[in-house]
Length: 263
Ligand SMILES: Nc1ncnc2c1ncn2[C@@H]1O[C@H](COP(=O)(O)OP(=O)(O)O)[C@@H](O)[C@H]1O
Ligand SMILES: [Mg+2]
Image 1 (tube, protein in one colour):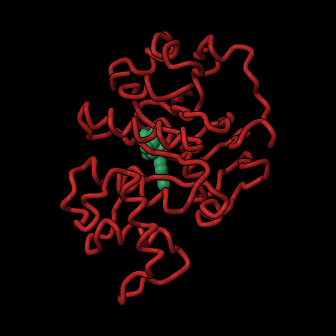
Image 2 (cartoon, rainbow, N blue to C red; image 1 turned 90 degrees about the vertical axis):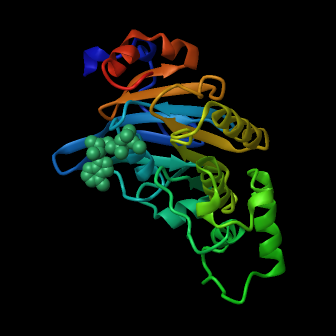
């Protein structure tokens, strides 16, 4: 694949160390048996940027973030977060260090209200009390519901929410862990145009409040006005990197999408 890389990668930094960004991947590889899902991937995420992490379905986007967020360790390579080697940390360990994520296939607890689902994420160490929530936990959970635009729906059950509402709940559950960096996996799947816009506005507000964001998506739709920079992967390898307008017109990127998803 070496000759199939975009000009945008020419002269690019290939060796990364702990000081190169808030989150740094250095030669991360993940194999599942004979399949190399992530192939020698290196990049850095800078504080308070919104990075778009893009690639066709099956490119290895979610696997990359599973390696970073402690779902499973990379087969090879190193992950640094806030200057420390965190390779192989547990998912809970990464949350405690300030790295939160949303899942592409998220499942809230269907028998708990929206606000209780958020409250549960506030207290990962504690068993949920059937007697109800403490005043402070309740207040914090309600604030987060307001923050993600679910203030008037906090007493609903998850299955009463539209899909965009479920995504907001998933964002609320991630924010409940008080993160410094948030990885959002395919937030726009299944959302209408106006919903994409209002979720984008929420993500921009969160960045303005100091959060660093990585937004994963299989296409550029909805991302152009949101992200500062994009990294595009295919078959687990980086094929392009740069400002979103350049990426969109990049022939190597367009080729990667030929016959498949829209860019
Ligand atoms: N847990 C797993 N076990 C085996 N193969 C997997 C696993 N997770 C992902 N894969 C494979 O790794 C490749 C990348 O998948 P994924 O990271 O989910 O892609 P994306 O998120 O970019 O759509 C795919 O071929 C997928 O089938
Ligand atoms: Mg995925």
